[in-house]
Image (cartoon, rainbow, N blue to C red):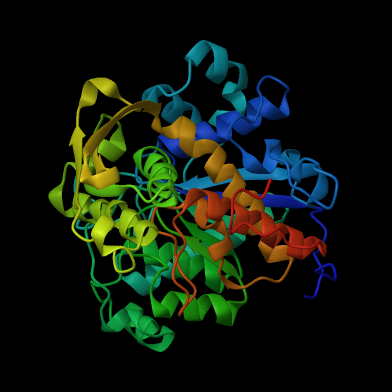
Length: 434
């Protein structure tokens, strides 16, 4: 096996981070980074900042062993159809305590004002956008987004850029002819084809500017042949989709336990209540359908019913999301797991996860930005499936099935880091690697 160090360009200079969507998640990320920079908080939840990696007989922090961008080098910007600054978004979303974690960094948050968005109310019906671009045709919108990226990079003297989509879930969209090749996609742009959603315009604009793109929503965005072709042509990394934060995080930890002990599964019922903007958007059945698709797939991939039909061949899997405004960003997820053991005797497991959606998402976003920038500097292009740890529905390299097991995902990530450093990989087929 080749263990020679991979050439990684220095992390010098500023790293521009452009969010598509400046709501609860993005404002929480920006506030957290500002607080950490000033020594007012710790990066809890960030593998890149607090995790370790085994290198021979050493286990240093990842941030000490891997040449990641320094947090002081990050510069934030955003697009959003709502004109609130990061400060106004943080106050309205109510994720962070205003006087402990927002007011001390108010000036830095006020400085992040969203650029007008490429917004189509037909794709996100529960949001009334006022901060939107005047262009109406898709080609013109894509070119306007490209100008935004160039202007931001120049205005903030950025050496590199990453665009990460933290926007609301779009209505369910099936891949069509316009998505099958880059040529077909660009023809659809020119024809103002309605099958091209706004999220794809951001992805297209970023990659055409040589900028890595991450899809944190369940929307059909970069997981089509046209976008993966563009990623390879442009020589940039892409990844997605749908940040793995609450209930699905639990599933991808518990399902491997069932499989490791060969315990059977009869059914898994999941329901959620949440009251933030994401919950309001998902109250639209067509947007929920998009989310449901990413949440339903994980168990089948992990449990492999075809290999173990007597254990997992006929289980019932149900997912529900309910918009409940009083909860705000404090999401609650209930899971009822009907399982069976020796001689087929039934058992149950119940999980009640009272979590904070954006608090779980923020360190995940930071990790994705830092690792994707690393991939960009290391010359890695196309789909970054080694970052599947962070997604409900990991985008796969064509012909390679996605991995959903949380622990294998973490091992794959660390082994990729080892490969870039020229270190031996650590086998994980029989357990954890670190």
